[in-house]
Length: 142
Image (cartoon, rainbow, N blue to C red; front, top):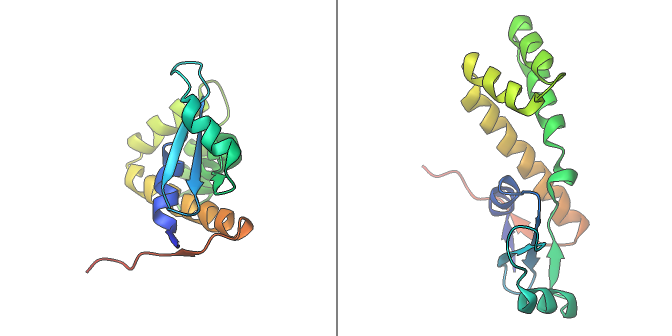
């Protein structure tokens, strides 16, 4: 069984507090398990994950470090003025919201989300390698 890096990256995009995601290494299926704070725990799935050797937890939002991705994107912008505004947005109150407002104001929103997806693909590739999970990359559609 091989997984597509892009499928793992898509799942990483949906990471949120209170949820853990797992890859079933036998089927390639990715499942999500709530911690019970906002959504009732799926005790049957939880038991299956705990008693099986075929589930591997995907990186969570704290392991992804989205703030670092935003900082690296800001530093990659060739315009010193835009770069400065983006970096300034990351240092202060409501950094995530300020940064997202700035990428819209500076008309670099599409570039940021493309950059972010590639960063998530790199994280997915590293995770697959660390967990000895065979992977492939989708060929670009023509």
